[in-house]
Length: 151
Image (cartoon, rainbow, N blue to C red; front, side):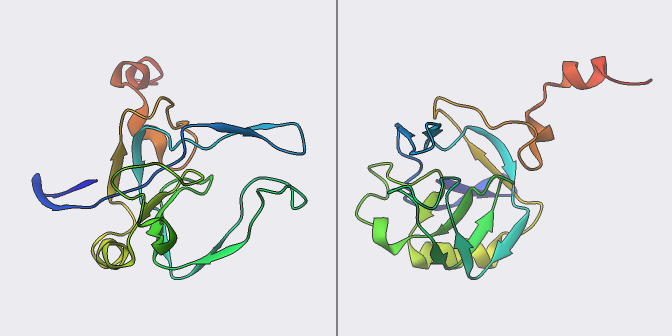
């Protein structure tokens, strides 16, 4: 992750994003763990937040974890957050369920410096964020906006 402030790169942060695989849950649904590409916006910050996947509780992949220093970027629950358990993978391998995992020190810096309204852009993950998932209007092409205009 390269962090820009007023167009200037101010910090590079190793990340681990969503695994590049899908999973079929006990409910028969397919879950895609990849972090979506697109322009997202920090909508809230929580320290801590309890995270749960969309899986049924009886699924072996289900978990409930209390996560510190979490900055939410989608309504569906993708966060930039501290993930000390994945520091071994940060910068080299994607191992999360879709969130952007960063070290605790980097998460503290991100949490202290970014808040609601700040933009997070993710690229080249193979899937795109749904424009209805958070403040996704940034992902609607201008021609589509003007085509829907009442003016």
